[in-house]
Length: 204
Image (cartoon, rainbow, N blue to C red; front, side, top):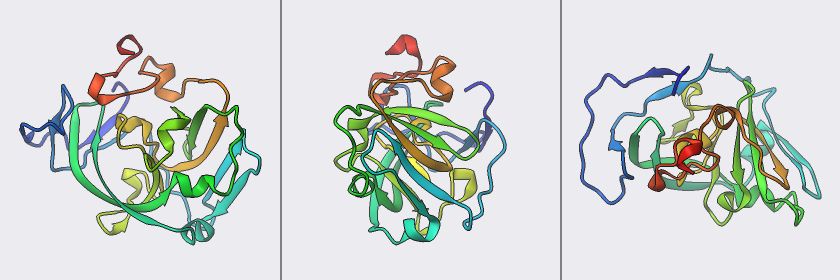
């Protein structure tokens, strides 16, 4: 990805034959760090998470309120558009399904824009956030999520390329029609299915 700062790509690639590795990907045991700019450092005393747009009841939680919501453990494979895959990653956080119990999404909502501290955005079809497909990750490998990996909280959508899993998540806006986010405006896929190698708009 042009413009990304990356860390950890000089290490030896792990080679594995697995039906869990999408085409064009390689397995890594590392967790490479990529960002398009400075890493935000968000004080927990000012952090909030919001659900807005096409919802009956807009919601906003503080850090303490968000952490009081029911949490789950998740184990997932993740796949970055820069071609690394990391298997069996361990997370703890709040399912998007749990959040939507509080907001009552309107019937006309079909898409979501995730937005972050640092002004990053990415678009996702609503169906790709439901039925256990996505969550807000708060802890990774038993530890609070590091800022370099999107902490204190990041969206995680394991079945899509990892740029869709917005770091430093601040909220979700529910929309009737699809709109491109930050990287999508730059030519990246509107959807980002790693199994179809949807890296760019021309791959959709």
